[in-house]
Length: 107
Figure 1 (cartoon, rainbow, N blue to C red):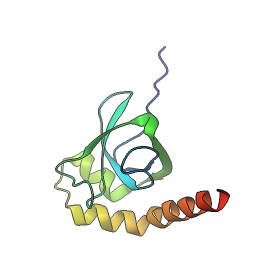
Figure 2 (tube, rainbow, N blue to C red):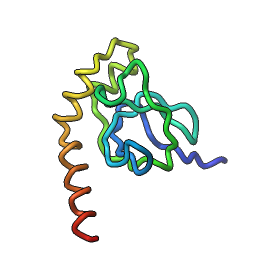
Figure 3 (cartoon, rainbow, N blue to C red):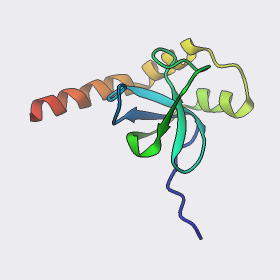
Figure 4 (cartoon, one colour):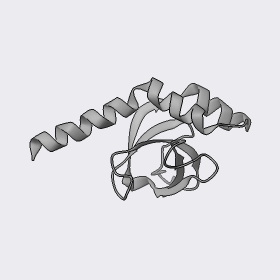
């Protein structure tokens, strides 16, 4: 039995650990394979042009947004404002900011 490395699911909230978008939070919008997913936040990365990102460069949060997850599963239209609102409502944006502030204090 092969152990699957990628346990991310569409609608899950993740934070980028590397690249230009380091420290930013996104939704997983599609799982491509064990190594790559597509992410979008409705602001920097629109739903229609998600970023392909290596799973190892993402910090998964233990939160799956039911609204976004369900829309993706059913193939419904997702507006960028929906992604922005749901990220804001989840508190993940504030969590990412506080994580960054903690890291700066340690320096």
